[in-house]
Length: 184
Ligand code: HEC
Image: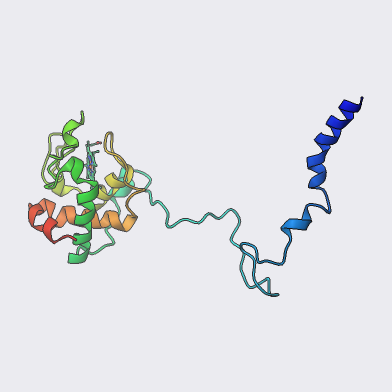
């Protein structure tokens, strides 16, 4: 009997320790707590909207390739954009598509499905790479392909358009070597 009452007392002990008024003692001090305003005006800081999460940006997707094809390129293909695109292409695309964009990257060589040539026609299409709209290239990066991964998380929407501009202005004009040197 003594033993069991001791066990019950021990079981109750933690809940009692959190019961009023004990729980208030140590936590409630005059120090300023996270997200609390120092001073009397507690309305100075706006609360965050419900369920908000701090993130640097959002992933931009597109519904499908048909929708992507119709998208207009909002980024002018000026020198700056092409240079940015070149830097990103070097990081994200050359492993498979190669520096020239023809699909001769070292990683690509190991794939069962070879990366397609981005500069000319390829065996898989009846149409030439130069014929596809900017939105197609952007959409392929966004959604990925059968083997190709999606880059929607790695590259922002605008960064993807920079890469499109690089593919258009440099790779499809056969100037890969020159531009990679400039791009920085
Ligand atoms: C892991 C290897 C790999 C990487 C990295 C990669 N691709 Fe691909 N890509 C492929 C493969 C393989 C295909 C063939 C189609 C498929 O997988 O569905 C392809 C196809 C494409 C196509 C379609 C070409 C066509 O003729 O229809 C485009 C456009 C493309 N890639 C652009 C890019 C761009 C831009 C990047 C860099 C952001 C990139 N790829 C990175 C492997 C890759």
